[in-house]
Image 1 (cartoon, rainbow, N blue to C red):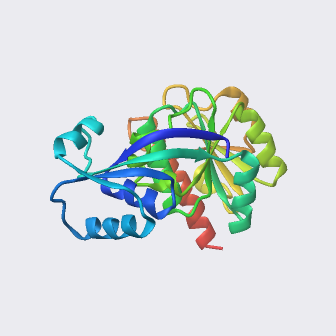
Image 2: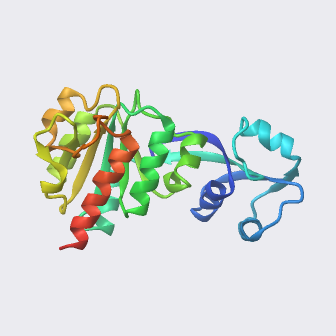
Length: 249
């Protein structure tokens, strides 16, 4: 493990995912009088795993979540771990012959990170690669937006995305960059092999150095007057085109 970040998670689903995935949880705060099937499932898991529980007023949870939708639940997670690029790759190929990764170049919004993680996990993807500096934070908002997917996916931070690109290419992973400036269209591109989808920020897009390292640059067809999608929407289109092609093989 390479990075430890303390955080407080809030919301029923993120906390449930943290407990299910075996994260090291210091304690869980529950709203007094909380009821419902998800609460009962959570209560049973907390008892089974011997995780300390404290019942608190809703006002305390609102303060912890800074007004976010806490749903009566918050958890103090001791650490959120990232893995090395080598470990991520080993884990991915141990599970899949044709893994899908996502490389985020300059994407700093935690909600976009969370939404992309959620899509990737739903699609059976294997990991997200972020730069050590300038990338979105792995915080509670990112985990909540991901619906807990960031607790299940491998996440890697690297000092230099170019190193990650070279390493993946040497391990047989093809890099496909999404850019509206490309001549090739996504739907005409082979997305069936081991794949890393490269996405840039909405303002600047993928950096020139990373674009040069992409094996192929593709555009998502746009028919409206707006020239580009939100980066998390673009990620969904790219990821599920890869899923569609794999199902068609």
